Length: 234
Ligand SMILES: [Zn+2]
Ligand SMILES: [Zn+2]
Ligand SMILES: [Zn+2]
Ligand SMILES: [Zn+2]
Image (cartoon, rainbow, N blue to C red; front, top):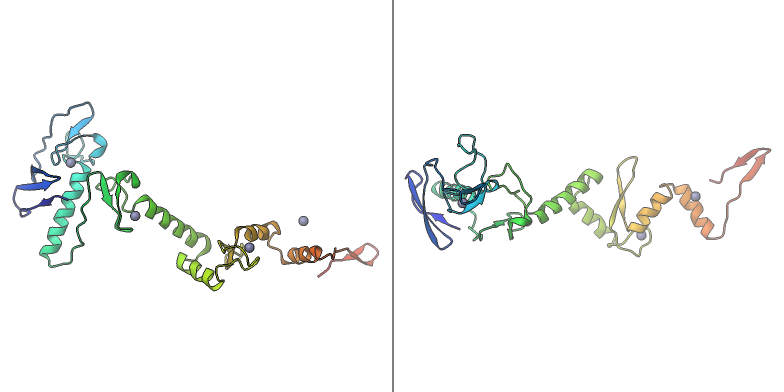
């Protein structure tokens, strides 16, 4: 990652990045390089010709775009932030060397290509904070919390209490958080089959009991109590 070596107050900073020495004006001049192709614009930072999408909006500019590309702006503000933190005697996170077109995910600690990020138009670098994989994990956690009111850690603790087994068949892996649809309370963690079976039996203990007796050969028949009055089994 390029380091800007001079103090923030000076007008020119030397940016030694990616094996090249680039000098750019910190005080923006407003001008930008001649576009090589229609819709392309040269970044005053890295001097690359990039599409308009590579630049963040700036209402005060003639073309409505910032003079430096999103990547350069992100690098510059990161460097400025680090210098300020160091000057204040604060701790600075270890700087990770990120190749061009890549970004570090602070959640998983991996450096991944930009394709591994979702777009976020309002972010300085145009990408979301967390990588797609970390966003997906967060999404699952949010789903669990929203749907069942428990965290992933609480679910894991429950599975551990059950020795990892479905508490109905005691054979398959506990995989599905089962909850009472009326109260929303979590009852346990079941395998997919047993969880589906409860649904098929409409979550009714009386139906399930009769099903068990039926399998054992006891077929229920109505008991006639009085003419036209049948007693249901308990
Ligand atoms: Zn640039
Ligand atoms: Zn990540
Ligand atoms: Zn099961
Ligand atoms: Zn039935």
